Length: 270
Ligand code: SF4
Ligand code: SF4
Image (cartoon, rainbow, N blue to C red):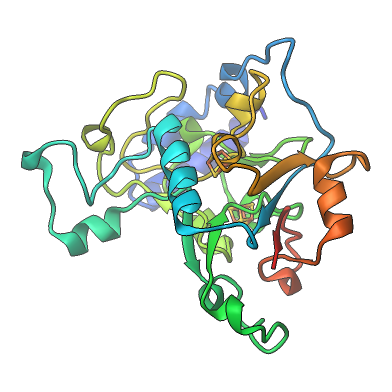
């Protein structure tokens, strides 16, 4: 993940060109900080290719809310619509624009556009789907990032190194799933209770779901999976004995915008 001198000058120039003041460029001299910060314990969970199955047949509003709350709590995701103190209250339209989301819900026609004709079951049209970064096997966000702030690990997880992000938002344009959010505003005052197990971010960087890489390193399940009561299944796609493989054998699943060729690693049982 190192950057040579020529590359550094190119990125510094780019960040200046984009009006970013070169701030991010200097931080690029500390490559691989995110990986270095995640120190795996002996009981760390490992896989050749992490994948998730979302069982929409079991999904309900309560479960979805629990998953979102668990994820956002352990990742210090700010809440602009319901700030922790009155003085921070924002106009709802502004708050909505600032919103950061790692995991969220949306209707079938938004989550799977163009698939309505293929899967005309009426129940799908009324279903809310739990959405997150698909940890694509062929991730366009990684290809377009000029600073390698977003990168893919060997186990398939697409990571973000906020120290290297210059806020150009090319990755947001590159992601066809809307899985990334930009910190338009300092998020820290909008975190109700700072969780010590994950770093807070600053204004001007992009963030997204990381399949709970920091929890896997401690031998834990992703937070959303842990509270989902078996609605979310997580495991190694390359291991034919894994629960993920078992569910993929047993049930019919779909993936978001599979025709784009990004090869999403989140599957939905419908
Ligand atoms: S869903 Fe978007 S952000 Fe996530 S890996 Fe795929 S392209 Fe990248
Ligand atoms: S895998 Fe972890 S980071 Fe991703 S949505 Fe679930 S809880 Fe959030």
